Length: 597
Image 1 (cartoon, rainbow, N blue to C red):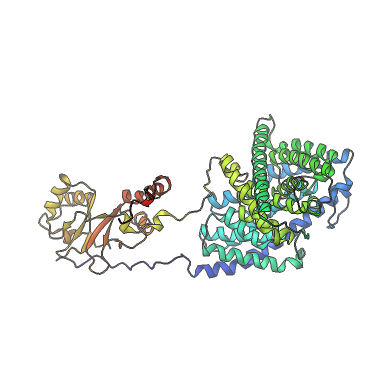
Image 2: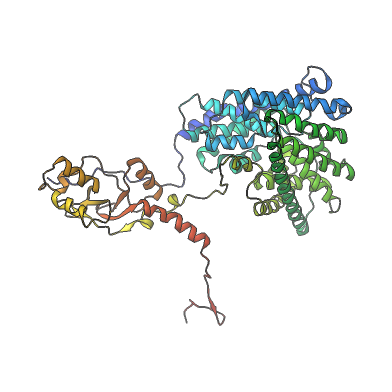
C-alpha cells in the first residue's frame, strides 16, 4: 500500500529577527551581571589606590593619590621593578591569562573558548592589574575591568544551563557594565560591545547588554561618582573647515595608531628572543618605565590627570611633546613585555597629545582638538569608530563636539583599515593562529531563499517502481546518490539513496515490492521554496541527508531539490555581487541606451 505523503513539516515562521522568550530570561540575568561588573570596577579602583599608597607612600589607604609627585631617585627605578616581579610571579604560578591588556583575551574566550572564564582569572586579573598600575605601570584600568567584568558575567552564566551564545551575552554584559562604571560612558560601552566584543548585532544580545550597562550607570554614583569623568567646557568651532580639519587630524591619529601597533608587536617579538623565561619579561620592561619616570614623572600610572590637563590646555607645548614621546616609549616597552594593564588610557593620552599639538595651529580651543585626537586614535587602534567618537563626547560631556569627533574617528578608521591588516587587539589573537573577521554582514544563507538556489524539476522516482528496478537503476544510470520518491500526483513520499539499494540487496528484500512500501518509516525532511537557505543548511547537518526535496506549499508536489553543492552557490552569489563590476547605465548621444526611442 502506497502511503499518502511523508510526515508533515510546519512551514517556517519568517521574521526580521530571531529573538525568542529566552531573551527575556537573559535580560533578567544581565541585571545581575551588570551589578557584578560595577562592583568589580569599584574593587579594581580601590585595589589600584591601595597599591599606589603601599608602593609610593608606604601606607595602607584607599585614598586616590597621584604618584607623579613622589617620583624621583632610586624609588622610581625600583618600585616599578618590584611590581613587575610580583605580576610575573602571579602569571607564572597563578594564570597566564592575566598577561596582556585584557580585551584580546576576552575576545579569544568569546570566539574560541565558549565564553568560559575561570574564577582564578576573575580574582587574579584585577589584583595583578592593580599591582602593575599602582607600582607605576603606564596602563589604564579599562582592559582589566573588561576582563574582570566579563569573568563575573561568565561565572554567573556558568551556574546555569545556557548555550555558549548566551554565556557570551552575559560575559559581554559584565564587561560593558564594568567599563560604564569606570568611565561613566554608557552609550560608548554599548557600542564597544557591539563593535569589538559581541561579533553580532542581535536583540538577544543587545537588549541584555544595554540593561546591564544601564543598571551599572544607575548604581555608579553610589560606588564611584556621577557626572563625566573628565568634565570640561569645550566649545567646538563651526563651519566646513572644522570638519575638514577634524578629518585631517583623524588621518594623523590613524597613522599614529598604525605606528604604535606595529612598534608594540615588534617589541613583543624582541622580548620573545630574550634568553629568559617570560615570567621575567615584565621586570625587564619595568626598567624602561623607571627611566621614563625619571625623565617625566607624569608618564607613570594610568595618567588620568594628564587627560584632564590636555582638555584644559594646561600643559606647555614642550611638556606635551615630552609626554607624547616618553609615554609612548615606556607604554610600548612595558606592554610588550607581557605585564598586566590596559591600552585605552595610554591611547587617549597619546591621541590627546597629538590633537593638543595640532590645536596650537588650528583655530579654536586646543582642548577640543585633543578630544578629537582621542576619538581618532581609539577608532584607529581598536577599529571602533562609533565607540571612539561617542566615548570622547561622554568623557567630557561636550556633545556639541560630537560631529567633529565623528569626523576624526572616521578619518582614523579609514586610514587604519587601509594600512593595517589587524587592529592592536586582534593582532595578538592572530599571532596565536586564530584569524578574526571583524566585518559584520548578513549570512548569505539567511538572506537567500531556497527558490534562488535550488535545482528545479529534479528527476524523481515513482513510488510504484519495483525494488528490483531501483537496484538496477542505482547500479547503472543513477547520477546522484539519492532521489525523491513521489506518488501519481507528484507528491513527496520520501527519499531513496544508493545505500538503501545496497541494504535491500543484503537484507534480501522482496524484489517485487514497491519502492513506496520499502521506504523507511522515518519522517522525510523537506523544505519550501520561500524557506531561508540557512534553515535547510541546518536541516542537512541535523539529518545527515545531503539533498533536501523542495515541495509546493499547497499541493506538496516536488518542485526542486537543494543539495550541499547548491548551498555553496550562496557564497558565490554574494562574492559576485561584491566583485563583478559593470556599468548599469550606458550613455549614447546624451541618452540612456535602454531608454525608449
